[in-house]
Length: 179
Image 1 (cartoon, rainbow, N blue to C red):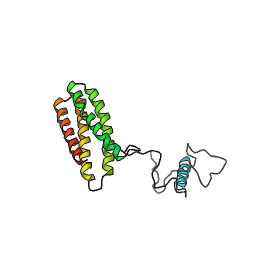
Image 2 (image 1 turned 135 degrees about the horizontal axis):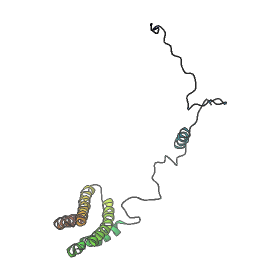
Image 3 (image 1 turned 30 degrees about the horizontal axis):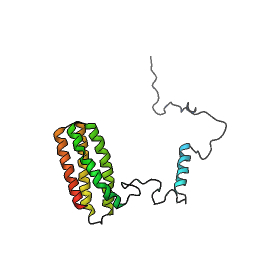
Image 4 (image 1 turned 180 degrees about the horizontal axis):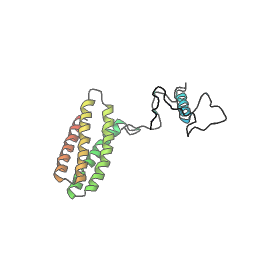
């Protein structure tokens, strides 16, 4: 019984020339340029951005909203007049903390600190450039202390609350010495 061995000189395979299963033969020829949705969207956006219209690339900010810390229409005199009242209401949180009404203390502290923050920022912006860094440092110390007091109040940590309250009142005294 003789077994025939295939010849190694020529392989015996034939290429499959049938279309792939996802390719269906069509009667109409394929266009030279295929425009997809992604290509059309990128073209329209790039033509909008690079057009000669200055409305998109204008350097000045929008005038609809003012996202600064300064109240619209607030003068420096208004801020100086209001800052003491807001500071007193921030220090009045001590009575709420002593009575143990933690949520009320947090609510009042957040309200008065937000108003005080706007007033002090207005005052800092009105000062000459040489005085601003010291005031900004004290401003940062004060409101970081207010945040720490808020967290301590939330956790109802009595000793830390009083430590943060003392730091906050000391920062307020330092700010008032410069204002």
